[in-house]
Length: 401
Image 1 (cartoon, one colour):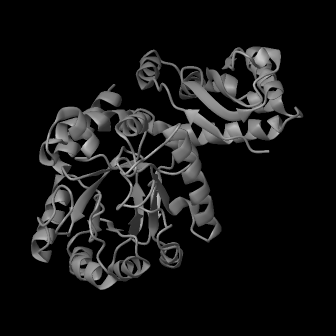
Image 2: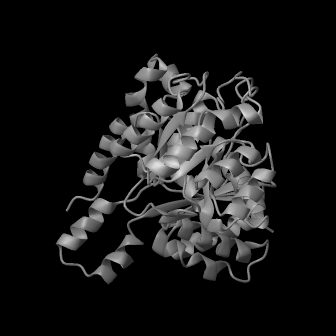
């Protein structure tokens, strides 16, 4: 039995670790104390009342606790959600406590140990055909280069290949670590170009960037033909907003070329995604979808170290859904992959501030702060210079001392 489980990354206290260093505590001692100063909440869904009672008892025996439904003590309800609350040190002993317990709790203990390890030790690099992308020193900026006439924010601005290349080189100088080239607008109601039209937009740019910049090039496409051509021309990453569901052959391209691949969640299609998006629990539902989808992709031969996940802010999401994703961006780390978010100039920022797309950079940086605190690895943005400055100051605050 496999319970739907999610690690809620609530607090990380690097400041206290710095205080311990200044006090002369050994590296080994700090590592031990770190386990005791990082509270963790683990959410487990679909738990029967007897299993919930066992979890409660075992967590109390460890010095932690479990928040259970108020009727569990009376044997109900039939299924409910349990929140385990403890520091990492206590939680690390839970698998031993659950070993041999009924209701699949032994397997659950091992599952929790794996998810917590992933959440607090995210991948430090992404493997691509052109080399590894280092995430160990902080989040990487993916600069958006839309070579489309109808993108929601900058449609038509970079249709000329020469201007597009100039913009890419400018973003590289401003601090971008990846350039994401896209030839299809995915705003609601946009017309989907055919394959030839999309190739005609992106290939002159990809070919020149492969020669003129040393940065990894990402191709933002849902079509396997476009992905294959871009990879042959020198791209090293595929950014598919459909997560490989619109054209399953794109997964084969990733496997055969060794490309890194971004797997994004979207409810519906670009044509329909904002008609009536609906979630009961957006973060948990998106995590479950990404878990299944990445499992399918790995099952088709794509190496785990080449996968990035993206919760798809603004793609089939309501305002409250987007805000919850931003607030819980760190929870996606328990999937075991680097996490990318794209919130640059998104409409939910305009709903809050009343600003037009080109004036949403400040609102986007406020949302980015929450994502960075959660540990995300890649920020996909239009405004590279401003984002780069923001990240440098954020890093300086987090790593001072």
